[in-house]
Length: 88
Image (cartoon, rainbow, N blue to C red; front, side):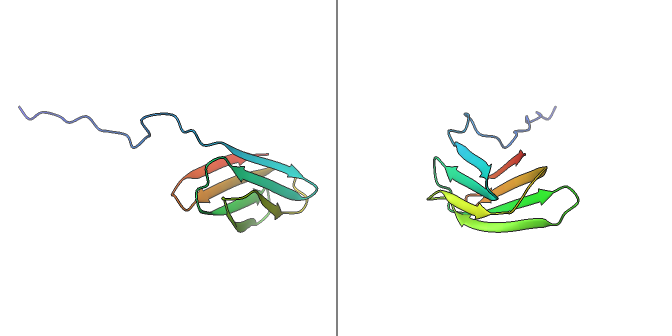
């Protein structure tokens, strides 16, 4: 009989300690990382609209002018290969 290897799932061994703050006000998104992850790509998709893409450095708070938003999906992809998603 051939032993069956268990399939491993590629997940962290412990919860992430990363904390990301993303707030919206006066047409801007304010994004800050507790632990910087290099250059990041921000995608903002409003229902029925084109996706807008912005690049920013996560070592300082980013202030990104996005204009008026109502209902959006937000995706941040970092230089370290992590992806974070949220909605507003």
